[in-house]
Image (cartoon, rainbow, N blue to C red; front, top):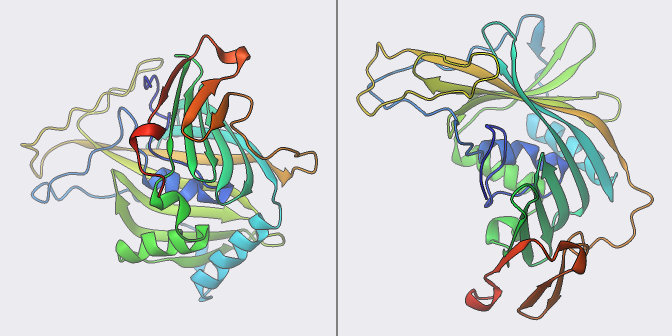
Length: 291
């Protein structure tokens, strides 16, 4: 699948549900994703403005569990919104892509960003690029099938030896805040949620890119990082925001096999539906174990 923008997701990454936007962002590998500086560069990380916010002292993992529980109560869930890439220095919008997701549970879900769509249907993973008219079918990996969304997020932060705090401000807003996270060019996590319903409103992360900023209006962001980066290497920070405009229970949901409109599957045999006969199909089911 061709990556046409900085916000398109990779074909090997999947949102199990709307609440897994966090893990999707942490595994993000866009064409111009920020590159971590080598140890010798000692480049600073993002310094998101936290004025007006304070640590409540509450158990963050218990609060995260409440957020997941609130989301799961919406299953079958439908959510939609915008992913924005923002110049953190001046707030200028660099790029915006719509996203939408439908989730029956942690192993049956559909996630779409712009022209790219990913579907989990139990043991199967389907990646679709509507612009390139391409459909890839494979068995879902262990990361998709093992553990609840909450368990996977907790394990991820545990491996990173990261911190997580419950934050609040004078306006009564709530946030799960992870200031020390760093991975794949992304740092610092802010997960905003509604204090009365525990539903997610927005998720924010920061992208540290080495090199001088070259994001002129309408131009692609260029990454000028080199292996010879030093302490004087210039860098810039972008802010990635996942804004949820709609998040609700989909009472009209019927057939939760989200790949049905596109393909027919019989054992390891896969065929395109007639409406998508002009798409190129690649299936690895006959070449992979079904474990």
